[in-house]
Image (cartoon, rainbow, N blue to C red; front, side, top):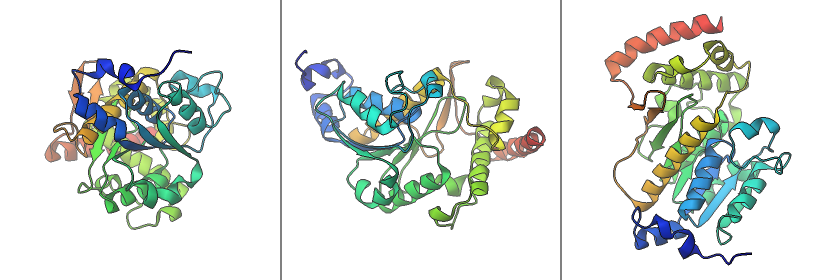
Amino acid sequence: MNAFSYDEMTTRNRGFVTAQEQARLREACVLVPGVGGMGGAAFMALVRAGVGRFVIADIDTFEVSNLNRQLFATLDTIGRPKAEAARAGALRINPEAEIELLGGEWTAALDRLIPASDVIVNGMDDAAAGVHLYRRARAHGRTVIDAYASPLPSVTVVRPSAPRPEERLGYPTVGVPWTEVTAEMRVACLQREIEYVLTHSSSHRHVDLDVAAEVAAGKRSRFSFSTMVTMAGTLMAEEAVREILGRPGGADHRGYFFNPHRTRVERPLPAPFAAVRGFAVRRFMQRMMA
């Protein structure tokens, strides 16, 4: 077995980051709840970038249907807890990385985990847990990197002073304890998110709308594709690096969509245009889900 060297592993990073910035990445800690699709892609990219400390959490196990997009899903990891398999895979890249492993208890540990983390990369899609994560991140002054439930790669950077997604998108969870979020509320949260995606991007041009309607109605799981998921995870990792190093620029709490079909970036529409298009989108969604 070849001897591991952190300096050798990261030698080709030079030019993108300075020696001092690489040292900062090595000392940084990133909290990643959800290491399946986008979260797993972001986690792997950050491990390879040389981030030295992580807390990862997941409550699921890898399934055959995950093989189409989740980087830590292989025939060898099917049936294994995602967080456990992701940690093992990361240590095969950087055996010196410090990785704390959590399951469903991560939501109860946020008041310990968030202050100890430089940034949070949200890789899970549970509406109730997401509401809790964002609320505690605001309380502790930490930034959350996230992405939309979109067929186009996307990324958002929600800093402590920015509105929470539940506030900005009008979720029915506002003012509701996260442990009291119902199944109906979860579906409504997803519908509001899809409404935003359809209003501010050209996503509807690139998917099967009948399948999308079933997802919006809560009748089937979200659909995902390998290139889109991996690109989104990489965009999230890039923003996490920017946050750790204190570099300017990047996305904000409204984020953007990258359209690889037309090689362009799609940014949120100005309010007057969004109001008109949003009205049309709501009527369209009502017809599609009827």
